[in-house]
Image 1: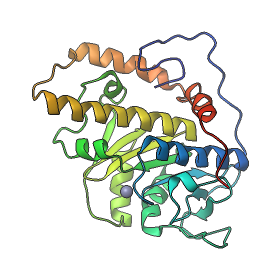
Image 2 (image 1 turned 90 degrees about the vertical axis):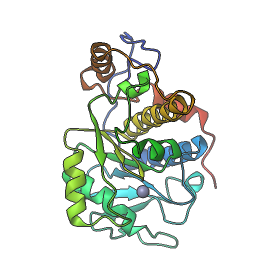
Image 3 (image 1 turned 90 degrees about the horizontal axis):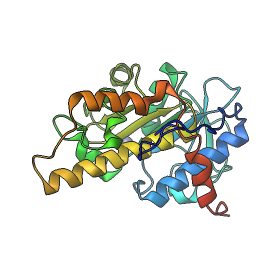
Length: 259
Ligand SMILES: [Zn+2]
């Protein structure tokens, strides 16, 4: 949800903070490692798999990613690996290896979408379940309406993403910030780590609601189409940056980084 709204529909906050200043690498490392820990705490992690990447400010073509083999709750700002678009490690050291096959998905999007400062790909169970529905995400909840008519759906093509699939994925995400990878998980592009996390949380909540709703009722009630469209526009809020209020609140809930 955006900075001035939320799942309760409370739009129009007058004291919403301005868009924060451009971060430096230390800030991005802090935010990205916090995002990994928050994902782990929410139970959206998958052993050591899936990835969240972020651009390094002032270094075009350079990105930060988790060291392959760490649990998400073990990730610290210093443990993040700096890589280029080819997956080459730029700050080599003990344990600084990455899942190159997994990074291919991120590389395709970072190369094509300069607005995607953070790419968050997760294997949350409900999202994988919803990705198998013929219609994908249904407009069953206020959370789902955030993605009404603007959620990409990308067909499953196998484990390792090649250049041709990368282009199909980029095409599916064209003009979009979020998508479901069929039989696989979620994909969110954020202008900040905070935005990617907040949108991912909203998408996952929408998927969890859909799984619960369809399990209890094969014919759930949907909002009227004009209500759905109007609500979606309100939640989009003219493209306002998301996560501005939520992110500091989430950071306050995290303890110190593991040592
Ligand atoms: Zn994956």
